[in-house]
Image 1 (cartoon, rainbow, N blue to C red):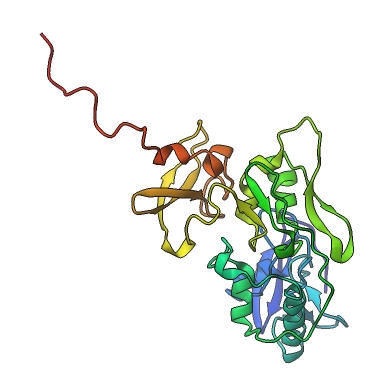
Image 2 (image 1 turned 90 degrees about the vertical axis):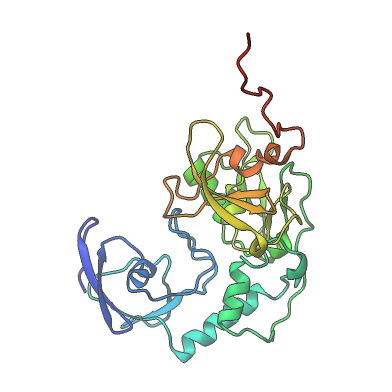
Length: 293
């Protein structure tokens, strides 16, 4: 195996298929190029990798132990295997560990229907729970003005932290405590724009840990029609989707990769849309169109 510098192209083999990618990218990026899905909970292309969930384990020929595909940089000539009985067993155990104290409140969770943890449990047929642990999760954090934080649901993927620090530049979130007591908190008393008033933390959360208060318990995602549009706030012209049901706007979302804003939302797109549904808005023109004398 030979190491190459960035901006060069390397070749590697994944599940018997050869693929060429730019040097410096992780194994999971090479798998995506081949259309091979490696399960993950914490990987997000637009931020730095964390390797927290450990669900994306793969085998690399010549390496003694499995490695995480999301933050292991692909090297020229390596041969990767993404699925074996042993890998599946380890992945299943990682998913079960995330579920040890995860509340089974899907019927009332706003993330139901678009929750990555739901999807990964369904895809991997997780139907049992052999593990037990003391529940030491922090109670819900309800005193932030526009976001409710539910630490019991959190898998500590750190997406909410990194999207603020690395992309919006106004990040105040951090991991408080350690071990099984760790939870996402925010710094107090800093003279910055606090990230708890911006919805990108909600948008990137793979579970229902970060919940938008204006949207909370208002609608189910599968009942909403997503209408492509442009943001109405300022001059950002974000590409967004208006989540609508029965001529009422419930929330605004934006997809990664296919939008010029790469899924990032302004404050107004995240929370400042309630005026659209106001009964005080004009419903008919105030001028009848007739010329005056």
